[in-house]
Image (tube, one colour):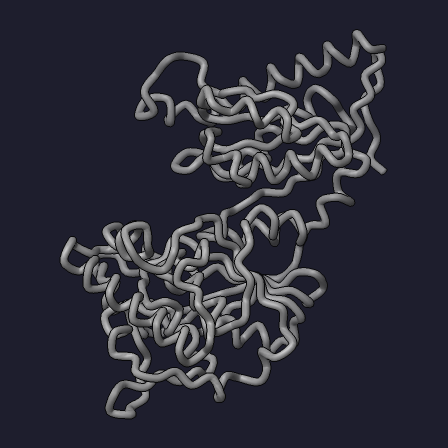
Length: 392
């Protein structure tokens, strides 16, 4: 058990840090380092537990490894253009759980100046899943986000033995540009090593497979799709949904999250038997959060901006709800806060602090993020110390 600072009645023995990243400015790990340093300064000897959080996209594996320890395993897999590359996944829980981020081999940065969601594939993600299963894991966590693809997870499915046939009876690996050619899906050849493995998919959006709020319309443009291509991709995903319903007996077109990552959410459900779960809920379950905070005096969390969308169950509220069950106070440090967040206080949030000290445009303030986070954490901890002294 770590020691703690007791001078003047102060009795803060344990603090848990579990922030989301401030996108474009501070990573979750950086925030943990800054706040953790200030905790050590104001409460020498206080035990600090850092749980950096990622949303399933790039950096998710490293966040789990930082929080829990484990091993990063490197594997040769296919990149978005079916070219060999070095991918990776994480092993945690003494090798019983694998963590995969699809961005590791299907991410947008990997295509560089070749953006074309008609041609890109999730095949490498399936290879990572197979590699993890071959290690004998009991559970696989797959993080969606940052993808360059729009293939409905067909590439990943093909990598594990699911067969896709066109109307000539020829087997092929569908990409975003060829999902409309799928005439039949055959699951019988799916690799047996996946049987009995629990697969959980981290998914923080609720978009359906297709339509105005579907995979192609909402996320296609950032992957290189012009308006005409968006319509083409959308029709392909609609066709895929119909074939899945007919051949696999699963009507998942409107399932919240099925449109995530180029409809990879749908593919994880249909081809891998996965359940879609909010990223923070997956993190909290995996790190056994209830046990971690059982003797904590304070939790620090936060995100770039807290607003009404945050209240739907993203990092801050996910943390706060579980903390409320154990009456642990939750301090939220954010880049900005809207005026519609009052319900957060009833969900377990104790107080919300913005790091921005002056009314500056984000283009200016973003360059001061480290300084502003440091100053805000320092002031919050000064307040906590003063309150503890009054108690004493």
